[in-house]
Length: 295
Ligand SMILES: NC(=O)c1ccc[n+]([C@@H]2O[C@H](COP(=O)([O-])OP(=O)(O)OC[C@H]3O[C@@H](n4cnc5c(N)ncnc54)[C@H](OP(=O)(O)O)[C@@H]3O)[C@@H](O)[C@H]2O)c1
Image: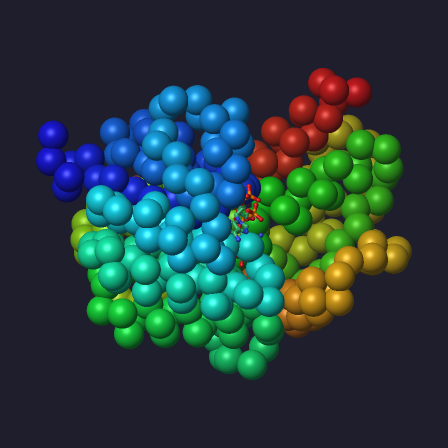
Protein backbone atom coordinates (compact mmCIF):
# COMPACT_ATOMS: atom_id res chain seq x y z
CA UNK A 1 0.00 0.00 0.00
CA UNK A 2 1.90 3.11 -1.14
CA UNK A 3 1.41 6.62 0.23
CA UNK A 4 0.66 7.77 -3.32
CA UNK A 5 -2.23 5.35 -3.78
CA UNK A 6 -3.52 5.77 -0.23
CA UNK A 7 -2.26 9.16 0.88
CA UNK A 8 -2.71 10.38 4.40
CA UNK A 9 -4.84 13.52 4.10
CA UNK A 10 -5.29 16.07 6.88
CA UNK A 11 -8.77 17.58 6.59
CA UNK A 12 -9.20 21.01 8.19
CA UNK A 13 -12.80 22.06 8.82
CA UNK A 14 -13.72 18.36 8.76
CA UNK A 15 -16.72 18.77 11.08
CA UNK A 16 -18.19 21.64 9.05
CA UNK A 17 -20.64 21.69 6.15
CA UNK A 18 -18.17 20.76 3.39
CA UNK A 19 -15.80 18.74 5.54
CA UNK A 20 -18.59 16.33 6.51
CA UNK A 21 -19.16 15.65 2.81
CA UNK A 22 -15.48 15.27 2.03
CA UNK A 23 -14.40 12.82 4.74
CA UNK A 24 -16.68 9.88 3.71
CA UNK A 25 -15.70 10.42 0.07
CA UNK A 26 -12.02 10.12 0.97
CA UNK A 27 -12.74 6.96 2.96
CA UNK A 28 -14.61 5.52 -0.03
CA UNK A 29 -11.52 6.11 -2.16
CA UNK A 30 -9.25 4.37 0.35
CA UNK A 31 -7.40 7.57 1.21
CA UNK A 32 -6.52 7.86 4.88
CA UNK A 33 -8.16 10.99 6.27
CA UNK A 34 -6.94 12.48 9.53
CA UNK A 35 -9.46 15.04 10.74
CA UNK A 36 -8.35 18.24 12.46
CA UNK A 37 -11.07 19.11 14.96
CA UNK A 38 -11.36 21.29 18.05
CA UNK A 39 -13.22 18.53 19.93
CA UNK A 40 -12.25 14.87 19.43
CA UNK A 41 -15.75 13.88 20.59
CA UNK A 42 -17.24 15.62 17.52
CA UNK A 43 -15.15 13.43 15.21
CA UNK A 44 -15.92 10.33 17.26
CA UNK A 45 -19.67 11.01 16.95
CA UNK A 46 -19.40 11.56 13.19
CA UNK A 47 -17.03 8.81 12.11
CA UNK A 48 -16.28 6.52 15.05
CA UNK A 49 -12.96 4.76 14.56
CA UNK A 50 -12.89 5.03 10.76
CA UNK A 51 -10.68 8.16 10.77
CA UNK A 52 -7.61 9.31 12.63
CA UNK A 53 -8.39 12.25 14.86
CA UNK A 54 -6.07 15.20 15.54
CA UNK A 55 -7.55 17.45 18.17
CA UNK A 56 -6.36 21.05 17.98
CA UNK A 57 -6.94 24.56 16.81
CA UNK A 58 -5.51 26.87 14.16
CA UNK A 59 -4.50 29.14 17.04
CA UNK A 60 -2.40 26.45 18.70
CA UNK A 61 0.86 25.94 16.78
CA UNK A 62 1.82 22.81 18.75
CA UNK A 63 -1.41 20.93 17.97
CA UNK A 64 -1.20 22.03 14.33
CA UNK A 65 2.38 20.77 14.01
CA UNK A 66 1.43 17.48 15.66
CA UNK A 67 -1.57 17.06 13.34
CA UNK A 68 0.68 17.45 10.29
CA UNK A 69 3.21 14.75 11.23
CA UNK A 70 3.28 12.08 8.51
CA UNK A 71 0.70 13.90 6.36
CA UNK A 72 1.04 13.67 2.55
CA UNK A 73 -1.77 16.00 1.48
CA UNK A 74 -3.83 18.73 3.11
CA UNK A 75 -7.34 20.05 2.63
CA UNK A 76 -7.37 23.67 3.82
CA UNK A 77 -10.67 25.19 4.93
CA UNK A 78 -11.62 27.57 7.70
CA UNK A 79 -14.69 29.70 8.32
CA UNK A 80 -15.02 33.37 7.42
CA UNK A 81 -13.81 35.33 10.45
CA UNK A 82 -11.50 38.33 10.82
CA UNK A 83 -8.71 35.74 11.39
CA UNK A 84 -9.28 33.84 8.11
CA UNK A 85 -6.04 34.86 6.33
CA UNK A 86 -3.89 34.69 9.44
CA UNK A 87 -5.16 31.19 10.34
CA UNK A 88 -4.76 29.67 6.90
CA UNK A 89 -1.34 31.24 6.25
CA UNK A 90 -0.24 29.71 9.56
CA UNK A 91 -1.43 26.30 8.37
CA UNK A 92 0.41 26.70 5.03
CA UNK A 93 3.63 27.56 6.86
CA UNK A 94 3.21 24.59 9.24
CA UNK A 95 2.52 22.33 6.24
CA UNK A 96 5.71 23.53 4.52
CA UNK A 97 7.71 22.86 7.67
CA UNK A 98 6.15 19.37 7.95
CA UNK A 99 6.98 18.48 4.32
CA UNK A 100 3.36 18.19 3.09
CA UNK A 101 3.45 17.49 -0.66
CA UNK A 102 0.15 18.88 -1.90
CA UNK A 103 -2.51 21.28 -0.63
CA UNK A 104 -6.10 21.81 -1.81
CA UNK A 105 -7.43 25.17 -0.64
CA UNK A 106 -11.14 25.82 -0.45
CA UNK A 107 -11.19 29.48 -1.38
CA UNK A 108 -13.90 32.10 -1.84
CA UNK A 109 -16.16 32.54 -4.86
CA UNK A 110 -14.24 33.84 -7.87
CA UNK A 111 -16.24 37.10 -7.98
CA UNK A 112 -15.38 37.93 -4.36
CA UNK A 113 -11.64 37.65 -5.07
CA UNK A 114 -11.18 39.08 -8.56
CA UNK A 115 -10.74 42.00 -8.84
CA UNK A 116 -9.35 42.66 -5.35
CA UNK A 117 -11.00 45.23 -3.08
CA UNK A 118 -14.54 43.89 -3.53
CA UNK A 119 -15.02 42.05 -0.24
CA UNK A 120 -13.28 41.45 3.08
CA UNK A 121 -13.46 37.67 2.78
CA UNK A 122 -12.46 37.65 -0.91
CA UNK A 123 -9.38 39.75 -0.13
CA UNK A 124 -8.48 37.42 2.76
CA UNK A 125 -8.80 34.36 0.49
CA UNK A 126 -6.72 36.20 -2.15
CA UNK A 127 -3.91 36.76 0.37
CA UNK A 128 -3.94 33.08 1.29
CA UNK A 129 -3.80 32.06 -2.37
CA UNK A 130 -0.73 34.30 -2.78
CA UNK A 131 0.87 32.73 0.31
CA UNK A 132 0.20 29.28 -1.08
CA UNK A 133 1.80 30.23 -4.39
CA UNK A 134 4.83 31.66 -2.56
CA UNK A 135 5.18 28.47 -0.45
CA UNK A 136 6.27 26.49 -3.51
CA UNK A 137 4.05 23.54 -2.43
CA UNK A 138 2.05 21.83 -5.18
CA UNK A 139 -1.55 23.01 -4.78
CA UNK A 140 -5.02 23.41 -6.23
CA UNK A 141 -7.26 26.36 -5.38
CA UNK A 142 -11.02 25.72 -5.52
CA UNK A 143 -13.21 28.81 -5.96
CA UNK A 144 -16.80 27.59 -5.63
CA UNK A 145 -19.81 29.77 -6.35
CA UNK A 146 -22.62 30.24 -3.79
CA UNK A 147 -23.62 26.85 -2.28
CA UNK A 148 -27.12 25.43 -2.67
CA UNK A 149 -26.81 24.06 0.88
CA UNK A 150 -26.63 27.65 2.18
CA UNK A 151 -28.82 29.91 -0.02
CA UNK A 152 -31.34 27.35 -1.26
CA UNK A 153 -31.69 25.33 1.96
CA UNK A 154 -32.81 28.50 3.72
CA UNK A 155 -35.30 29.22 0.93
CA UNK A 156 -36.66 25.67 1.08
CA UNK A 157 -37.10 25.88 4.82
CA UNK A 158 -38.98 29.22 4.46
CA UNK A 159 -41.38 27.52 2.04
CA UNK A 160 -42.37 25.02 4.73
CA UNK A 161 -44.91 27.52 6.02
CA UNK A 162 -45.13 30.19 3.33
CA UNK A 163 -45.67 30.92 -0.35
CA UNK A 164 -43.05 33.66 -0.72
CA UNK A 165 -39.50 32.86 -1.74
CA UNK A 166 -37.35 35.57 -0.14
CA UNK A 167 -34.16 36.28 -2.05
CA UNK A 168 -31.28 38.73 -1.74
CA UNK A 169 -30.72 38.78 -5.51
CA UNK A 170 -34.05 39.72 -7.07
CA UNK A 171 -33.50 40.47 -10.76
CA UNK A 172 -30.11 38.73 -10.98
CA UNK A 173 -29.16 35.14 -11.75
CA UNK A 174 -26.89 33.02 -9.52
CA UNK A 175 -25.30 29.76 -10.69
CA UNK A 176 -25.60 27.99 -7.32
CA UNK A 177 -23.44 24.90 -6.86
CA UNK A 178 -24.30 21.79 -4.85
CA UNK A 179 -21.70 21.33 -2.07
CA UNK A 180 -21.65 17.60 -2.93
CA UNK A 181 -20.14 18.55 -6.30
CA UNK A 182 -17.54 20.68 -4.53
CA UNK A 183 -16.67 17.68 -2.34
CA UNK A 184 -16.46 15.39 -5.39
CA UNK A 185 -14.13 17.85 -7.13
CA UNK A 186 -12.08 18.28 -3.93
CA UNK A 187 -11.47 14.50 -3.87
CA UNK A 188 -10.04 14.64 -7.40
CA UNK A 189 -7.99 17.74 -6.54
CA UNK A 190 -6.53 15.83 -3.58
CA UNK A 191 -6.05 12.37 -5.10
CA UNK A 192 -5.70 12.94 -8.88
CA UNK A 193 -4.68 16.56 -9.39
CA UNK A 194 -2.47 16.01 -12.42
CA UNK A 195 -5.09 14.08 -14.43
CA UNK A 196 -7.81 16.60 -13.58
CA UNK A 197 -5.54 19.54 -14.39
CA UNK A 198 -4.77 17.98 -17.76
CA UNK A 199 -8.49 17.77 -18.54
CA UNK A 200 -8.91 21.42 -17.53
CA UNK A 201 -6.01 22.69 -19.60
CA UNK A 202 -5.20 26.21 -18.41
CA UNK A 203 -3.56 26.43 -14.98
CA UNK A 204 -5.02 28.64 -12.22
CA UNK A 205 -7.87 28.39 -9.71
CA UNK A 206 -10.64 25.89 -10.42
CA UNK A 207 -13.77 28.05 -10.65
CA UNK A 208 -16.74 25.83 -9.74
CA UNK A 209 -20.35 26.72 -10.55
CA UNK A 210 -23.67 25.04 -11.18
CA UNK A 211 -24.67 24.57 -14.82
CA UNK A 212 -27.30 27.34 -14.95
CA UNK A 213 -27.68 30.85 -13.52
CA UNK A 214 -31.21 31.20 -12.15
CA UNK A 215 -33.06 34.34 -11.07
CA UNK A 216 -35.29 34.13 -7.97
CA UNK A 217 -38.36 34.32 -10.23
CA UNK A 218 -37.18 31.10 -11.90
CA UNK A 219 -36.43 29.51 -8.51
CA UNK A 220 -40.02 30.35 -7.52
CA UNK A 221 -41.35 28.69 -10.70
CA UNK A 222 -39.39 25.53 -9.91
CA UNK A 223 -40.61 25.54 -6.28
CA UNK A 224 -44.22 26.06 -7.44
CA UNK A 225 -43.93 23.04 -9.71
CA UNK A 226 -42.38 20.89 -6.99
CA UNK A 227 -44.85 21.94 -4.28
CA UNK A 228 -47.95 22.10 -6.48
CA UNK A 229 -48.90 25.56 -5.20
CA UNK A 230 -48.08 29.10 -6.38
CA UNK A 231 -44.84 30.56 -5.01
CA UNK A 232 -43.75 34.14 -5.66
CA UNK A 233 -40.29 35.72 -5.33
CA UNK A 234 -39.72 38.83 -3.24
CA UNK A 235 -36.85 40.60 -1.45
CA UNK A 236 -36.18 39.77 2.22
CA UNK A 237 -38.19 41.62 4.83
CA UNK A 238 -35.58 42.35 7.53
CA UNK A 239 -32.10 40.93 7.97
CA UNK A 240 -31.63 38.95 11.20
CA UNK A 241 -29.13 40.57 13.59
CA UNK A 242 -25.61 39.19 13.18
CA UNK A 243 -22.24 40.50 14.34
CA UNK A 244 -21.00 43.59 12.46
CA UNK A 245 -18.18 41.74 10.66
CA UNK A 246 -20.53 39.05 9.29
CA UNK A 247 -23.12 41.73 8.46
CA UNK A 248 -20.52 43.53 6.34
CA UNK A 249 -19.35 40.31 4.63
CA UNK A 250 -22.93 39.28 3.80
CA UNK A 251 -23.78 42.82 2.61
CA UNK A 252 -20.83 42.68 0.19
CA UNK A 253 -21.88 39.23 -1.11
CA UNK A 254 -25.49 40.27 -1.70
CA UNK A 255 -24.54 43.53 -3.45
CA UNK A 256 -22.21 41.63 -5.80
CA UNK A 257 -24.90 39.01 -6.46
CA UNK A 258 -27.52 41.69 -7.23
CA UNK A 259 -25.03 43.25 -9.67
CA UNK A 260 -24.95 39.93 -11.55
CA UNK A 261 -21.41 38.88 -10.59
CA UNK A 262 -22.45 35.41 -9.36
CA UNK A 263 -24.06 34.41 -12.66
CA UNK A 264 -21.04 33.07 -14.58
CA UNK A 265 -21.22 29.37 -15.54
CA UNK A 266 -18.08 27.28 -15.95
CA UNK A 267 -17.56 23.74 -17.26
CA UNK A 268 -15.07 22.87 -14.49
CA UNK A 269 -17.29 20.36 -12.65
CA UNK A 270 -17.98 18.47 -15.90
CA UNK A 271 -14.34 18.60 -16.98
CA UNK A 272 -13.05 17.28 -13.66
CA UNK A 273 -15.79 14.73 -12.91
CA UNK A 274 -16.88 13.70 -16.42
CA UNK A 275 -20.54 14.39 -15.58
CA UNK A 276 -22.76 17.44 -15.30
CA UNK A 277 -23.12 19.45 -12.11
CA UNK A 278 -26.10 18.62 -9.88
CA UNK A 279 -29.10 20.83 -10.68
CA UNK A 280 -31.10 23.31 -8.62
CA UNK A 281 -34.27 21.44 -9.59
CA UNK A 282 -32.84 18.19 -8.20
CA UNK A 283 -31.62 19.88 -5.02
CA UNK A 284 -34.89 21.70 -4.34
CA UNK A 285 -36.76 18.48 -5.12
CA UNK A 286 -34.81 16.71 -2.37
CA UNK A 287 -35.19 19.56 0.13
CA UNK A 288 -38.88 20.23 -0.52
CA UNK A 289 -39.65 16.50 -0.70
CA UNK A 290 -38.00 16.11 2.70
CA UNK A 291 -40.16 18.96 4.02
CA UNK A 292 -43.29 17.31 2.66
CA UNK A 293 -42.36 14.03 4.39
CA UNK A 294 -41.53 15.85 7.65
CA UNK A 295 -44.77 17.89 7.60
N1 LIG B 1 -21.19 29.05 1.64
C1 LIG B 1 -20.83 29.50 0.46
O1 LIG B 1 -21.68 29.81 -0.41
C2 LIG B 1 -19.36 29.60 0.15
C3 LIG B 1 -18.96 29.96 -1.15
C4 LIG B 1 -17.59 30.03 -1.44
C5 LIG B 1 -16.65 29.74 -0.46
N2 LIG B 1 -17.07 29.42 0.80
C6 LIG B 1 -16.04 29.19 1.84
O2 LIG B 1 -16.34 28.03 2.59
C7 LIG B 1 -15.69 28.13 3.86
C8 LIG B 1 -16.65 27.66 4.94
O3 LIG B 1 -16.93 26.28 4.72
P1 LIG B 1 -18.06 25.52 5.58
O4 LIG B 1 -19.37 26.22 5.38
O5 LIG B 1 -17.95 24.07 5.28
O6 LIG B 1 -17.54 25.84 7.05
P2 LIG B 1 -18.32 25.61 8.42
O7 LIG B 1 -19.48 24.69 8.25
O8 LIG B 1 -18.53 26.97 9.02
O9 LIG B 1 -17.24 24.82 9.26
C9 LIG B 1 -16.09 25.45 9.76
C10 LIG B 1 -15.13 24.37 10.25
O10 LIG B 1 -13.93 24.96 10.72
C11 LIG B 1 -13.64 24.45 12.02
N3 LIG B 1 -12.97 25.51 12.80
C12 LIG B 1 -13.46 26.73 13.12
N4 LIG B 1 -12.56 27.42 13.83
C13 LIG B 1 -11.49 26.59 14.00
C14 LIG B 1 -10.25 26.72 14.67
N5 LIG B 1 -9.92 27.84 15.31
N6 LIG B 1 -9.39 25.67 14.64
C15 LIG B 1 -9.71 24.53 13.99
N7 LIG B 1 -10.88 24.34 13.34
C16 LIG B 1 -11.76 25.37 13.34
C17 LIG B 1 -14.98 24.08 12.61
O11 LIG B 1 -14.78 23.11 13.60
P3 LIG B 1 -15.63 23.00 14.95
O12 LIG B 1 -16.45 21.73 14.80
O13 LIG B 1 -14.62 22.87 16.01
O14 LIG B 1 -16.48 24.25 15.07
C18 LIG B 1 -15.70 23.52 11.38
O15 LIG B 1 -15.31 22.19 11.14
C19 LIG B 1 -15.27 29.60 4.05
O16 LIG B 1 -13.87 29.72 3.93
C20 LIG B 1 -15.97 30.30 2.89
O17 LIG B 1 -15.27 31.43 2.41
C21 LIG B 1 -18.39 29.33 1.13
